Image (tube, rainbow, N blue to C red; front, top):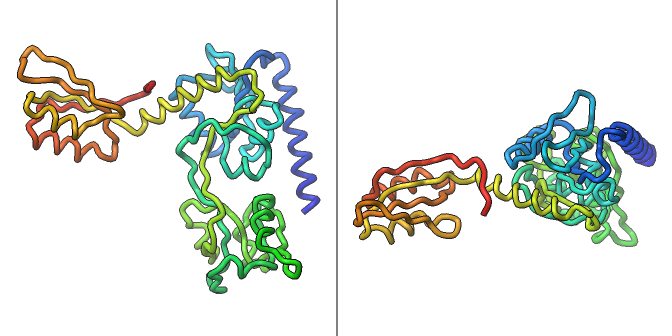
Length: 314
């Protein structure tokens, strides 16, 4: 455990040194630094979201920094597990990582907003064949996890003078520990449960729910950029969840139509040349779109049109 921790610290030092060298002559010191995951599904999702929010950049090969176009922002590409520490220690101003990583890191950061993706649960899992029904039955046993700080804190609340739970850290393939006889249970993330079930494990207890979040350093001098980024990401997230519906409806059906399409706050009603009709536009959740169009048709609305929303500011 201590060897692994030392290696992780060395890796973090190497990342810090490499990133600082890359920034020399490339990263204007007055820029706001935004850390995002450097690879994998999180990288793809985060970069898609940033571009949707109008944060454009071009990443050069083999570089872990990139300048944003038209904004005083430097993107820093880091392992997701390191981002909370970098933000908390002030090496970068803003970051995108998981709530689980923030709790595990134990650093003080400001949670700016939830981003609505990467949802999963951090759970205590035990072999199905052992029929463990209560997490208390694992107290005093051997737990393997890549979240040692969260796990130790969780079990310490149940430990007694006679029973102390052993928590050991591994960096990957946590689910294999029980099958190899290294653990009585594991604490690991569960998204779909496929990997867990394939390893013959089941959830005994959920410790926390987590998702990707935007965080900032509490003392950042770039609060204006934090606010701008939150506003833009809010607008992009709204745009991905809604469609704009427009239609015409007679005055006597207007109240019923507006009840069907209330929008985010209220629908927009516009006069037409025909004084007996109004044009209405409103945002409708994508999941409710088909049913909403049917209801509008049934009350007599006409010329029902649906438009994609690429971005928004509410």
